[in-house]
Length: 353
Picture 1 (cartoon, one colour):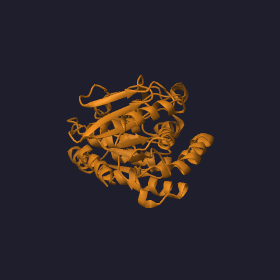
Picture 2 (picture 1 turned 180 degrees about the vertical axis):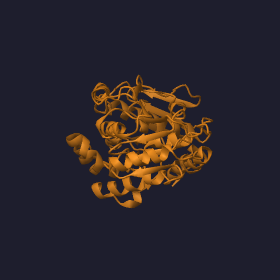
Picture 3 (picture 1 turned 45 degrees about the vertical axis):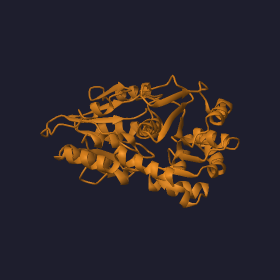
Picture 4 (picture 1 turned 135 degrees about the vertical axis):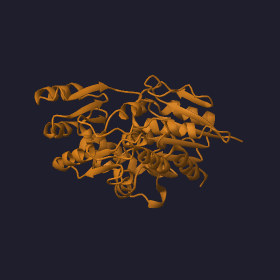
């Protein structure tokens, strides 16, 4: 008998958690499993829902706080073998529903380092942390994206390490790869982020101001700070060297046309954009955030600067843009370590155990 697997998400928007579960739904789309992706808001969709063999259910509730009764009814009627959830508010929702509907396997995926998120979200982060501390006991296992995240969750929520398992985010294999260009005069940098405070884009603009004039930056993404960032670019005289292209769907295609991805975040769980960049052979310079220790091999596929060390970040950008990189080797290495088949098998093994 096929095992019915539910993956519960707020939406299929352009976020990292959404991308990971969308990829996992395709991994589990095989004869042993019946895959159901449950969305609170099916209208917000950056990924295809036209995938043969996968059923998408839109609860049309938008918010987790409005979804309890509909999700409880769905789980009670369909009796899934396993439910996967991700992000704080969805994990809390699924844990609460599980008090009234028995599910053999409940697996949560933590989407961030809770201690770091308190720096940016204050009361909201403390609210989620308070409920997570008590409700995470409902889950059979909690997937952490990095060893650093695992240790932080164990400390903050007082969870036995045996129930926490590190499974990295997967990357999908594409044919896209950066051409082996000769080092040229124009240095093309790209940052792909949601335009919010914790992504550190204002300090990236500071670094850009200190870089030589032949360094140009593309910022891809959307968010509440778009207009403020554009005004700052104008104020510091970078309007000829920094351009905004908004949210993009063909992420790897766009990244492959640049020399270097720069990640300026204050905090990350396990940055998908770094995976995507390396998967097309484009090296990365980043501040030290969650997951990059497990992604970056210094000098082989990028460099890491310590948090807030803008001088070192600038030096590493210059160094990276004047180094010859082996783009096919960078691509092959990241696919070997984080390909969907490998990461999907780790989730399947977790489920079997």
